[in-house]
Length: 314
Ligand code: CP
Ligand code: NVA
Image (cartoon, rainbow, N blue to C red; front, top):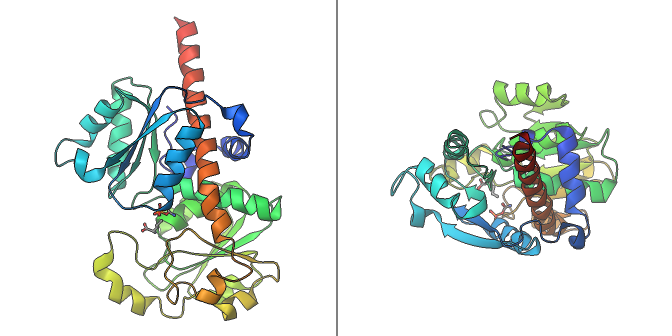
């Protein structure tokens, strides 16, 4: 089953197929979801993911149904397994933004055990944000063309966005340098996973070292959703890790700046950089919709192909 909980659920070739579908003329994808529902469960807020996914579903001829986390109450009103089984009765794909990644895993297991061919797509969890990483790769392709040999310097928290980005970059042949304060960098498992994909990754606690000559400076909030209690502690820990003009001047002269958004100007990024000429954050945000269209078209086509093959086998 073609679930999409993390970017490396795709092979490198499949990632290329998704990126290529993201830029395919809409007419080529028209009807991929014709007459079918897509559930969009959100346990956390969203400005970009909800709107872009709803419109991507609509562009493919499907019907998005937004479901607030509190409304279904995963593991409160009923189990993650029962929520998944229920939504799969109506929808061709279940997309969910969850507090705890394990809920997505349990949903996929419940559907798999039941033999239900409805894929689950991660719209952000505490561990991963693979739909964001698709849009990031798409944006970098538009900016640079071939990505082989390019370097992304990620400055900040080795969080969900960092994890999916590092894996995606490695799959696309992009080097990753990560600069995080002590205690907020990648752990050994993260690094091993990147290396298993053939990734070239360096870790430092000096932003200037990471930024030197880089083609891309990337950052994300210091305090992710669900970590609000740590905001003051994190502000102190991340002092000196702002992507500002000084850091940008150390990167390649053609470097671009990405941020998944929402941004906090004056914390992880200065206003002059995010609103300046090297910033590509609005192109990146717009690409969330194109990448989502490509992903959903790819996922439903893969499921349809598999069910046809299974039918032929009987
Ligand atoms: N980048 C991103 O996922 O934004 P939202 O949280 O607003 O959806
Ligand atoms: N790391 C951030 C990303 C928001 C899109 C969070 O999880 O809140």
